[in-house]
Image (cartoon, rainbow, N blue to C red; front, side, top):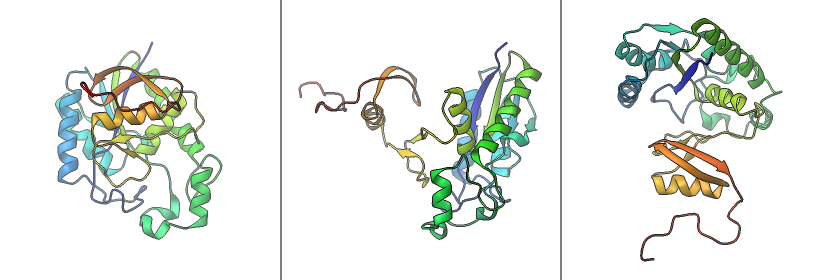
Length: 233
């Protein structure tokens, strides 16, 4: 039996890119985030969801609410989907954290380094994977939407791909810069595809606007352009 998980990052909020929110309370989607939640609900409406689960944090719960409502479901709270525990660093601005040697050490070896009062990424990966295993045993061949947080989703993807929790690094590609320096920013399709080719991927299929199926290939080191040639050029 195979359970299908739709991994959903919570919608945008006003502190994005400025504050390391972690598990601080009171962080909720703003106007843009609410629109994103409604768009997600429309996108997932035809997927036959059997359940919708979310992290306990408000920004995940409020993102999950329209998805569940559109599917005629209630939102289930799953602590395993919670944000990484950043401990004493939660609530601090990225400007204040910049240059902190302890945080720099954590970023370089997250799998073995623990923020003060927080958790390692290996611990975070372990609890989210145990949560997914429990859901699979409970729901069987069902399709579930799971609303969580960027780093937690990256850990699930790393596990599925057989990668270590600390690398190679996984990045989301954004069409509009959201102030998150851990993500890649590409304003349009041409830039996204150029970035993939420059990183050594051959694009096999592009079934949806934000989905690419790729294979590893040789890096373009022979001077060939990574942008597709234009007709008549």
